[in-house]
Image 1: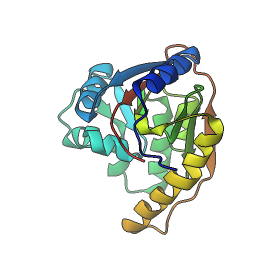
Image 2: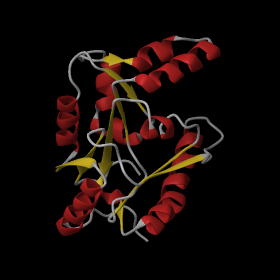
Image 3: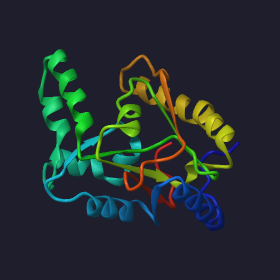
Image 4: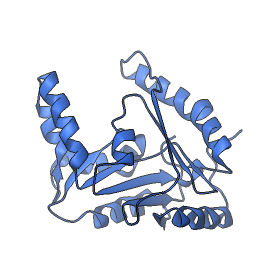
Length: 202
């Protein structure tokens, strides 16, 4: 099965409606440039920001914006990466669960409205479930699938193998899936998805 095709507008519209019924706010944009502009617009100046590992944020340019330090936010990863003591770094990561805005992506979006995420360490799973005041997901529309069953197939057959290879390419032994989160319903006003009509991430 091809997991990289952008679905028809009608399918996107149906998916957006299903997500909204589950209290997930959705903003549809055409491309990664619009996605970056919208993301920057959603996060107010002075807010604390934490990101989960995702190639999507790299591809839209948000990771580079944070690294440049030329932005109006408090990027909590600056302090985390600056800390070399593993125990202290771990504590900073725990404290980041109280961030104002947590930004990352997901593995699959069902047309029925469920959203699926998997993680090796829980650094995204935890914040998605509880903690940060606001969660923003940026996702390419190719991640839309028919239902939750297909969402799991997309995760295992497409996302996990590609992430495993990506980790090996940068010198790690690979990846494992230790946590899986199915988002059935969000607290009103807490989660926003920027859905991009362009292939982003995997």
